Image (spheres, rainbow, N blue to C red):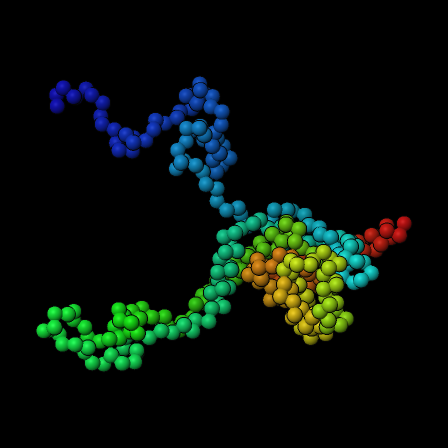
Length: 313
């Protein structure tokens, strides 16, 4: 022990197992080609080529704030036959609804919550006490050289009860309203970014005919894609009722209202078709503050008049 008095103290377990630290002086001398990026935006002290697997920085989810400051724009297509599904104007969209970043974690939470609420929860199985029969002991306890059994309705018997049976229960649970609202806006923003948003003048039919609806969808370029049509919140509107009746024969068409628009429906359908009335009601659902003195419909009408005048000239 006296011989080792001048020796260096033993290193700790962390120091003994970890690699030597990369100082700033050593980094300046060697000049590595690349560094990892820290959460604060600076360069870390360890070069990228000497990093271990655990040293990799895993970015967190992006903040749930709009990615754009100004209003977004989308083409306004013609729903009637005179336009032939062509672009006849431009409509402005709210960035708080259509410009949100993709948050798959929020969408997954809302979809799981919706599917859990839709579960019937009526599955019911019997325990060994509820199964019919098995009241007497199948054989004596001793004397036969066989195993001890008390009932033929035990879980390990064929036709016996279940050890942990399913019973009727309620699978629904509570989810924050802000999370649900964020999930809908994220799903709508994804439709806008992928070019799967089609805005038309109105979503109404003169006759409740499936052939007429297919003709209007074909004019917009929608033939085999699963489409979700969002009308207005006026349930008593006869034109909306005719649209819903015409879409009942089509498996790839789903008609709903802005108040009943859900994340699960948006995820299951490829294209989102919405009218100006439904667009206004959908944005009003989130109770956002106004961004301009004039309503959105007046902006659209002015754009329609400008485009028609430009086309005539």
